[in-house]
Amino acid sequence: MVALAYTVAFEGVDARLVEVQCAVTHGLPAFSIVGLPDKAVSEARERVRAALTALSIALPSKRITINLSPADLPKEGSHFDLPIAMALLAALDILPRDQVEGCVALGELSLSGNLVQVIGALPAAMAAAEEERTLVCPKACGPEAAWVGATNVIAPETLGDVVRHFTGQRILAPATPGEVKLDHSTRDLKDVKGQERAKRALEIAAAGRHHMLMIGTPGSGKSMLAARIPGILPPLSAVEALETSMIHSLSGLLDEGGISRARPFREPHHTASMAAIVGGGRGAKPGEISLAHNGVLFMDEFPEFPRTVLETLRQPIETGDVVVARANAHIRYPCRFMLVAAANPCKCGYLSDPNRACARVPHCGDDYLGRISGPLMDRFDLRVEVPPVAYTDLNLPETGETSAAVAARVDQARAIQADRFSGCDHMRVNADAEGSILEDIAAPDTEGRALLIDIAERFGLSARGYHRILRVARTIADLAGADHVCKPHIAEAASFRVAFKG
Image (cartoon, rainbow, N blue to C red):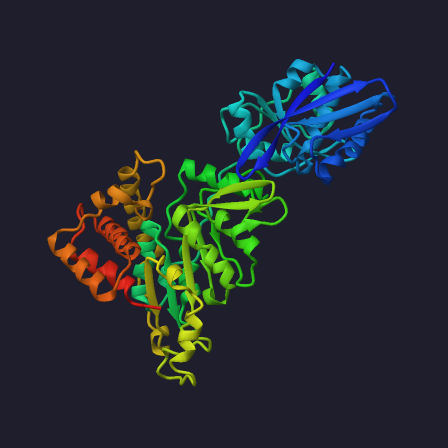
């Protein structure tokens, strides 16, 4: 008779249920695993055999066949060890079959029988909840999986604990969620001398999740400003925290099962490959744009990134998700992030500095910023120049606002947007607004509309640029507590839009 256990195979952030079938039949002694297993899954038979030997359980001299169904779905990862062991123990009548069939299990086995932490416990718990099954996972994964309150999570430390639990010798208590980690940034906006316009752009970008480009000479404070963005962003909502943590769970980035309410801040180096930024590689893992979901992706030295990498950002910026296409699968990851880019005005960096002469004016700047294509540049809502700070200004006392004061306004604006888009599943902030909803919430007054039309004609704005000015103006109005978009809001939004025509 065939014994059954259940586990999951990951397709992006989705976990597909996999049935683990075990048959112990007469024939030449063998232990085989079928159903498109990768190398790690195929090696599970040796780890399972050693773990059972550590429990003084000898395998019978029979033919043992493990089938992973559906057989045409690729199976990857070491988390298949535990469900294979449980199915085998059920086939040997050591574990009750009905209880094993009521579980979804994942976990890697050591040769001594200990359960090793694996990735993906949170998506697996979501799949178990949908199937109304109990999740069995390693003890280190328990606090992470327990955040899904709709399912019972059992987190044993060893395979022996699994046997004792299901045979009633020692029942394990359900796992409890790990503590939420609140990361308090010590970097404050008040530390930045001058750069008031750039600070204002940061506030607007944070309030509406608008994409922002900073251009300035080396040492003018672009990276310093970007590093202070986490201090003005509101914490993740419960839904956002779960979405972000599922991606981080697949990447093994959740520390001891704790789910953070701080928004992710990712800053990849400009030598990063396309697979590292967009996603892909072995197993089609999520890239930096997905790891920055609901947070910030800061790309310093923006023109230095490979052209192919920059161009692949265009579609994810618009759609909010990315599809990693492979020959045998198409994996979709969410990636609604705020792109903050920083660049020098030219290769040497001093094209706009009157105190330093650039030998290739103006070709140096045209060649360098020309690496950013027009369609990609058109997707930046805010473009701000960050001029060098005078030495005398560095000795002045602190006069700027603190990050806490700016964060309070940003939080208030985000609350207005959360209420505004409460009935829209695919819209959360002003940057997501489109179509008739955008026309309704960001319709300017008569003077504002006349100004916007004049700007569009004078500067040759694209339809995308026109609508992005409306979104930014709506955010500016939210920061001011205004119910309607007026001429000053349009003027300020347009000032950040037409500053650079590169």
